[in-house]
Length: 249
Image 1 (cartoon, rainbow, N blue to C red):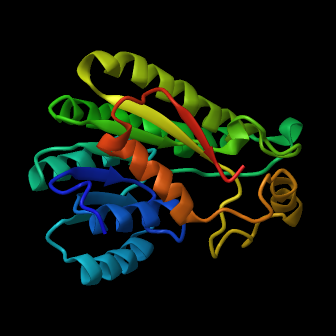
Image 2 (cartoon, rainbow, N blue to C red):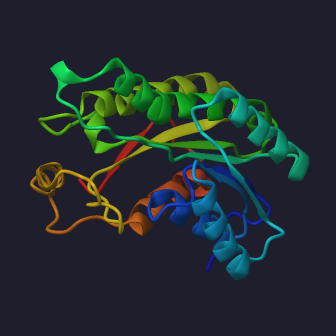
């Protein structure tokens, strides 16, 4: 395993599930980074932290239960980061929530909930990370958007598509403002990415609609998305900013 991130400090949110965030944490630790990660589920976070601590050691890990759309909780998380590591080089915004509802019947509550989790969370983390990234020699933000931002399912995805489209706008704005300071910001747009909870409680028609769009005859996997995220977070992409990369289309 390479050591592209030796001595680097990273933040990853939505990190303790079975999907992209957890894979990114594992890969960053394996490649030498110290990682502060969070998840909204304290139980899931405890289990995940025990797993990665056993594999990589606890000395390079900071884990906290955080509602990523809650301003005060995000602020406290970054205060813990500053106390523990004192610096930051990489921010990976992995949070996403999709609540399917036909447009005309979408309650305002769902709209606000999805935008809070899938867009406001990215804004809050980037804002708290910004002063630390300004001090980094190689700062990078990677925002996880979605194929839904460009090609949403034909039913029930208005809130999610709007939020993830907003992530793209946020990414371009961060890239534009950050360029003068050396801060890069890029976005990854996963398509149908398989994890063990993919079909749990999800309308099969929704999953099938994405499978029908695939160019490759298979679902994507979290490790394939992590490959792209780590590339964008590393010095290998040092001349890339404001880019959108689709994975698993």
